[in-house]
Image (tube, rainbow, N blue to C red; front, side, top):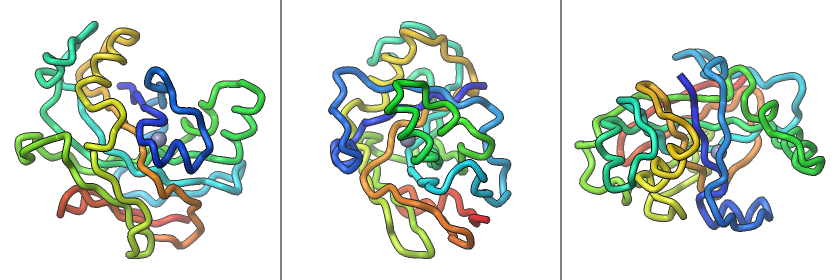
Length: 203
Ligand code: ZN
């Protein structure tokens, strides 16, 4: 199983990190070892002093596909989720400055939080989903999938021109504005519309 992540997919988040608006989606991969086991606490790794949460809408791929056209993309997923793309921002920044790959900053153990899955048929319009992240029960990130620069089906079309998608692969669709640092004893929870999709403790 692989995790395909999209960076810079929400304008307000691009601006808060002072990044350039990309001409094509920014794509990176997290290894399967980065998945935080269910109901486990997240331990801040010792190599970073600035680990950020990034809440993101997830899509689970249900069958193999390559060069998928956007209009056929819905045939490749039935389930929608919510998760966190934990990012060691300090490490990512120094790697970016040197023009080096980000994997260490985004692919470390526990860096992918994957909440529960819900059938896509639960929603009227996947391009109008409200989601949010709460830290210590206060909303810190709020997004709507309508604000994505590239929508779910366009992302599947794009990434499948480079990578064969396989059953069980997961797409992280990018984070809205409001990313920030986690501290020991923080409590995070994620909401998709009115449903809590995950919660975890930071250690
Ligand atoms: Zn992200």
